[in-house]
Length: 555
Image (cartoon, rainbow, N blue to C red; front, top):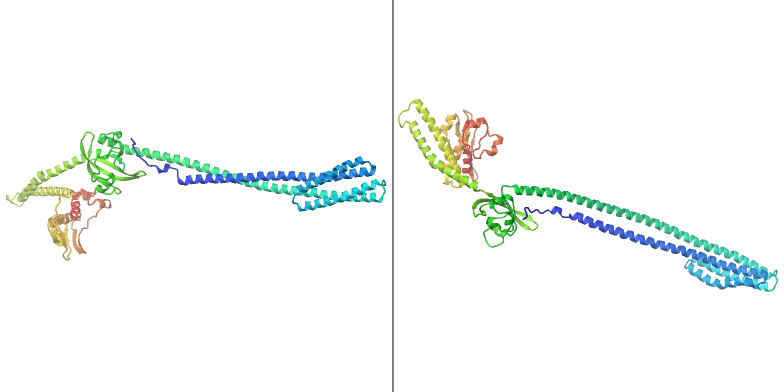
């Protein structure tokens, strides 16, 4: 059986930490996606740059190839013109045959570049002009006259065309090289930018990962510390639970026992295992009214649990013995619902003491008060001369005995009055009366006591104060107040009594000029048997019940 049920919401993952971890995971995933996308773009850019380099190299090669074919054709033509041997026309014929296809290929490589396209057009026009010059040269050579004007003109035209061709080819190659260089620089700049971006993203990712690791570490460490403190608190609570001298039970909403401490096991004679999930009526019937659920019946029959309940009930031990118990009930909110905590105290000893007190009060009432009253009356008769005139010494002793017997009678009456008040047996005969008359009658009764102390009592003049009360008990209240005031007044002092009618009430005040009430004693002045500890107070005597009785009667 569980010995102690504790709900520890602090051990659960905090929503803030949970959301922080989720946010960190989402951010890290987003950073990885951005880094991956940037790297993919960079890879594509690298492939595009390599393709551009390859195409540029191929373009320049093709330009060189076209120019080389033109040079081959010119060399063949010159050899044929100089020697007349048609063997030299073979490279010429081959160059002329390949030239158109190579120009078409070059045109495809140049694409949409307008400047290169313009140079290619110029190159084609020069090639056509060169072909014409070559044909003229070959015709002049067939005339077998190296100095013919036609041959010399063709030679001059061919040389000029070839020079211009070299210029156009060099310009095309230079432009292609410049374009490749610009592409390379642009690609390098983009690569550097991408590198910085990737480095920044990786740094951010690293910060996120480190922060997440730190937060997780702090959370785990804090959670472990919290669990340690909770464990220590649970251990202390368990120790308190088991070491309590009262039985402590926890009940679920249906009224079944969930836990019980060691004191409860000893009190009822059952082990915790035997009481697991057994109804509380096995030990104490806490809720007997109605047929509804336990908490409903408990609330209907015994009031709301929120403010706590204390009831005197009867408990049952394992051997069938019944015994009186005090049961304190309180509500305990748990995630599983409202549970009830019951603290049970065995009051058998208290009941025994109360019975002894009742027997003592009965003994005092019947065995002491009656003979003391008789003794006090007899002593009063002797002091009054009923048996003749007594010698001075005997009269003095009789007077002392009478005063002490009357003091004992007053003490017994005070004890009996307190007992009646506590048991609710004090009866009050409430009738309309004048509170000023009550004050006067009380003063008249205390004249002798005040004179012996050398104190005077004066009633302030005023209007009558009609109230409803028990005249004998009100006189007892005022007498107790006057007695207390006279005892603490200095010799020759005066005790002032005033009665003031007010709206719907009347106020009776007794004022003396004694040492006053010590600050530390004011909270206990109306408590039973309460007396100040000063030597002056002890010298005045008294039981400490007068003001307590006065307050109980007034209330």
